[in-house]
Length: 332
Ligand code: NAD
Ligand code: DAU
Image 1 (cartoon, protein in one colour):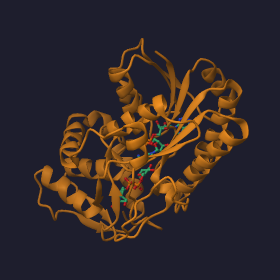
Image 2: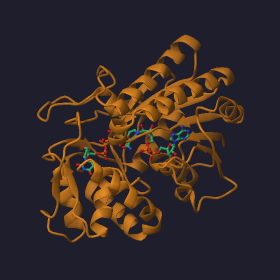
Image 3: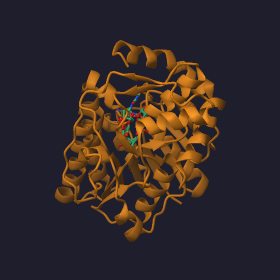
Image 4: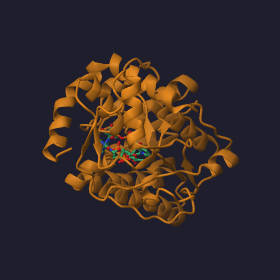
């Protein structure tokens, strides 16, 4: 049994990880989360008080971070500004949280010699052509496109430097696009599901040919636990579940699963600098650490996700109007 500190544990993937840890281990979890617009304490509802506690605070608050590291056996760092569209509108919070926040945690890890796992994204590698037979591997050079992905790339490089220069015991994982419960409705899949629930047509950026490599958030969690338990210090692991689909196919599948005509969506203004395709080769994680995804079938996982948004309207409804007003102002 260990005491885990999970930054960003009230966000989408962090809260899925906390639920996964409670269900599959006997670890205790302290969540450190600033509860920004993207954090929601309700995402931790139903978890046992004697296993999980939430500390509302900022990862750039060095004294608080120091105090929490003192009681942690390992830290899993999910906290971030995570949305590309927001980073195009106002990049500053991305620099503060993703760069300075990660630096603050690294300094605490160095002081306390704490095991740290840093959560990152496949977007640090830039994008691929649609017909490129290659996928991203741990050897792909960094080439981020957006303010969001460039700050995530910067944070990864800080982690690597603190491992090499100061002997910090850290690992890094770069995962592809997640879907599942508790995802903020600004993101593609829950935005379209909640639009359809509200009787609004889904919105596809540009032609919708962009490809994302979808993985269920629970599979991301099992991969992170595997790396925490068996990963080699200083190593990077790519996480993916062979889930490539273009956005048009995803919107049409959502419409079909929700009983709507599959052409009942609108094309809207494209994202500036929109990455074309992401694709992950997760051979290293599978062969060296023996990890495998459990959600083989995207359609089944998506249907369960649609059910979750139908059954949990009180979780997402408070954010819907403001989210759509932000997009409407940009013609999206
Ligand atoms: P999210 O936006 O849903 O959640 C982020 C959480 O971090 C929120 O709870 C927020 O309140 C908290 N937070 C933000 N700034 C903070 C700060 N300064 N101090 C403390 N807490 C703060 O994000 P997500 O989609 O769950 O992503 C989590 C992590 O996974 C991020 O590091 C992201 O880069 C990475 N990632 C996401 C995906 C994806 O598909 N969403 C894929 C790969 C990697
Ligand atoms: O690849 C991992 C990344 O996946 C993570 O690092 C990010 O934190 C996460 O937000 C996600 O980034 P994307 O930009 O790929 O996700 P998003 O949900 O914003 O968009 C997915 C695709 O859908 C993308 O090609 C843009 C498109 N899109 C998005 C929205 C919100 C639309 O066509 N319409 C929309 O309304």
